[in-house]
Length: 343
Image (cartoon, rainbow, N blue to C red; front, side, top):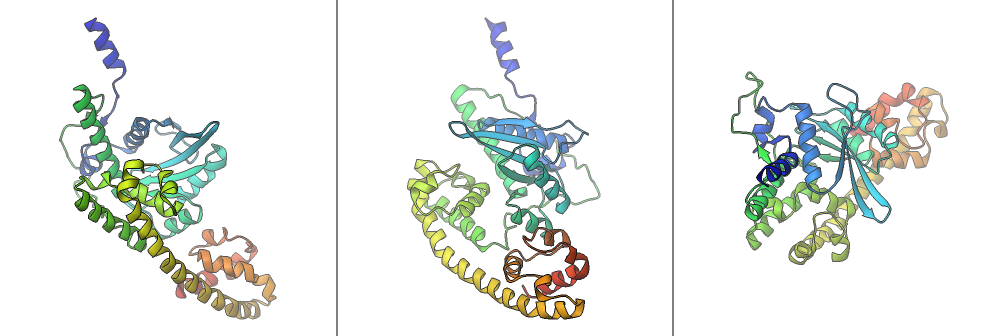
């Protein structure tokens, strides 16, 4: 009987050692990009999702390192393609474009990029334009804390856990480089995100909840902003918001969304309209200089698309719906510089 129990325990054991901290993840010799992919694999696996690790170490993955599947309704599944980047430097637009190309190839419904660092400005803009969810270093920290909370619950309930942590032996892999420092305030360009983090701190103090991610984590903030729920019932449909959290925090979350929405919409529309009007005027100059008709430069509708998307690179300009790609070589660089100076 004891032999059988030991065999069951051994076969159900996770063959991987989790980091106890973000610092350990980034500086222990145990971890590399492949181990980081396995870290994400097991995190999503523990949450009940079906996870597929695409490709093998050193081989191509077709743009997605992991495919995470979860059932939404009977016969309907959410398939998330994840590009994992175990990087100290910021991720550029290349991996974003690779991930985008995987959507049809793997029949994906959602695209996520998970990095231990951050994205460059160009990469962020392309990711936002393609509706790619971004998880940064601060979100990875939350995932590590999530694993630790599962471990504690298993120990408390069963007296043992299948989760193993790496021993505290942090020996920097890059002795001449600084350790990665990831600020929890890396969303400075999004005031709504900062407001949600401030509200999270207030709610944690008010209800005496610790750690902070137990109120809601950064990924949940992204989902709330994206879904923009109007009622508690709609908030309940967002992953991570159960009945208890909605009862405790629902009113505060909806109040923040409502108060911010009108202000954000007004500012955004004013800026878009201002840029649109400038683009209409600039179209005349571009047409005369390049001996084109104004309609050949871009239409009024394309000017609206440009004012909304605000392309910063030629690659991004190619994605503007209705923009003639032949014009990129003619005046693309000029147009990008014009837009950059006027936003």
